Length: 147
Image 1 (tube, rainbow, N blue to C red):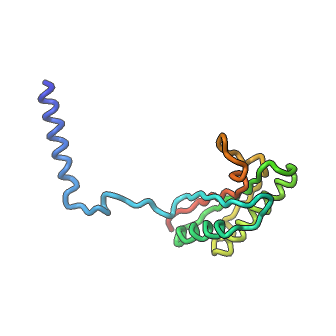
Image 2 (cartoon, rainbow, N blue to C red):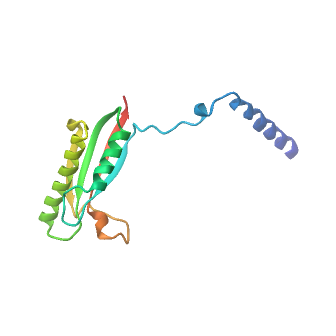
Image 3 (cartoon, rainbow, N blue to C red):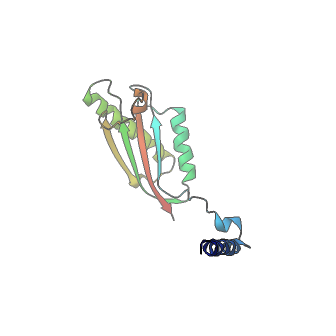
């Protein structure tokens, strides 16, 4: 009985191989669409809200990747590390989010899609053992879809 079941499974496996014959690789393997939700982070120097060259490159690369997509919503959330007071950190987070939003708009992103937020030090949750500079950032969440 076991030999018969194994033979039947082998026959089905061999028969299934014929389903892909004559098909092009592009029909079998689909590239992920660039027009999908994206997330990236922009990092800042301590106490700064000015964009670095690396930040401008990240914004530019993501903008290029999303050209031709329907950008529905862009959430920009400014964060800060715990140095300084809570009010100063919230102000710094707002300035960081605004700097990123202005750079995205200057790169041609649809301004009505922006939602700005600032969490100060309270929203900058890091993995265990992460160093403080990881908290000096702005998170950018892009809801994009094919047009």
